[in-house]
Length: 269
Image 1 (cartoon, rainbow, N blue to C red):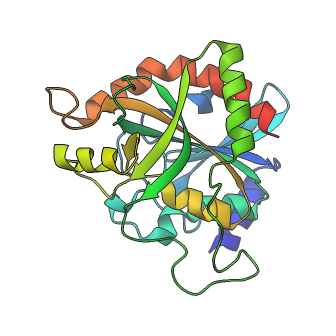
Image 2: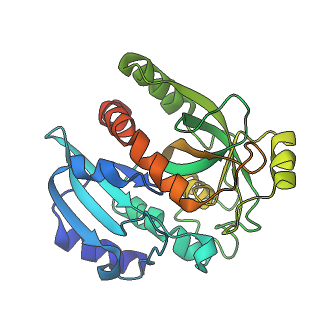
């Protein structure tokens, strides 16, 4: 199915980007910055899972940034909590890898755990904790794609993080760095779970990204991860959490994130 999707996309667009961006909940505005764009609804791509989460457009977009840099954008992703298996959640990354993408910037909406974070902040992911109960590489291995036991000691490229910090400084954008904890969802975490996550070293928490990052590393694709703190996690503030707050924060940081990605992507190729 990966090769079938690859062939379909190659028919739809002549572009062959080396870099891609995955846009999380409420963070889809960057896709509008591409010129000469070819949007392909996920429903039209063989084997591509549909995203039902609010705030995910469900389109794969090929276009040019700044008139020359070819970029592929996944506007929305599939999640385990929607009932998809790991193979479906990571299908997009596998197809992008087959198409020749060698760098991916993953963005997501996350809950803030670190007491120094605030709503609307951007966090470069330095590492992650997989608490989703599974691994996308479980099962038979195809040695032609990647190793049976891939190294994850630098799942998020140190070189890319250094560049990302430099670009943020140049753009006057405040960024921090932290550890992302991936939970299954779809329920938000309890205050006790947040205390546990803080105790084991997590700074932000979400329900995505980690399976995709594992597969990207397996395929030899370099990764940068950026979390947008769209809400403070349970127990951090005396209020309940809802998805509308996530989407509202996405709108709040939209212009900053778009400006950041426009300056950052050309430096990663």
